[in-house]
Image (tube, rainbow, N blue to C red; front, top):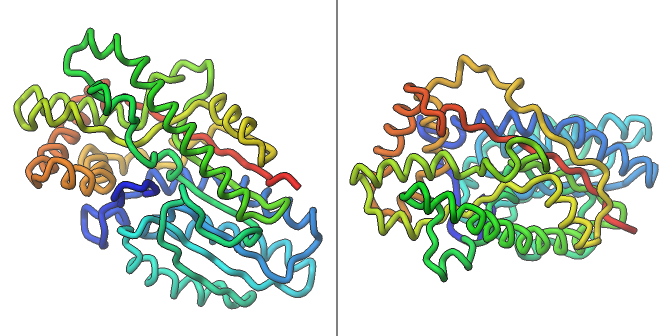
Length: 357
């Protein structure tokens, strides 16, 4: 997903593919539906009608989720466009890093175009590249959507790398003592990246354009604020593997997962400081209620972890055996109810923005 590093999910449609193991991400997208509908409504209220609308999904990944957000937007546009008699032409732009499985995306686009064409002209395009850079021409987009993407950083926190501070110390006392330093370094990198993201999107959106973003995060002042990070459970398991000699400790100590989950307060402050957007709403998504808990077996959770982290693990540790041990460890910890894994919980934030005129 979106980072200048070579980050991508497991490709294809096999048992360990992202296409077959993105149930949780799908639930997050479903939670964005009302915000997307409201964003389209705001577009129509501000201009009454458009002859053409350009929608971009940034960090689309692959599988059925790649078209979920734009499908919601197209349905909402057609709902409001019916009142204008002539439906607008639609241009759908799907973006992710170059190593994303765009072959899978292209196959799914065929069915999407056929269904969408029944209510109007639809053009589609794939746009490889990092969204921490400019991707589109100035004032060319009407609606930007992104889910589970801007939490991926452009790089691991420089402060930690330079000072040799591990993401997750093997020593419990040292880990607790350094935890604030680690979180602060991740927060600084997120602020830098997200500010850049907002600035570039402000250049690409039309005045009054809409943007809807979801990402893992916390509610400031809540019990999980700055305690649970998206990488916590994986770091715990990798630390356990290092303690058993499955991976080298020195190798783990220089491994950083480039992902961060901010609080709603952090998001609000960054958006206000960047000053290109008006915040319509920031909400906590109820993701868990949208998932069939009977499907979340230890094996299924292990496959979901593998789908996201296998490419990264292979690139860094260079051994397929490390991934196999990670999967076995995830399944074992889930089966035995290890609190740091089985009870790990993440909140998800959804923020709706309007580009200032």
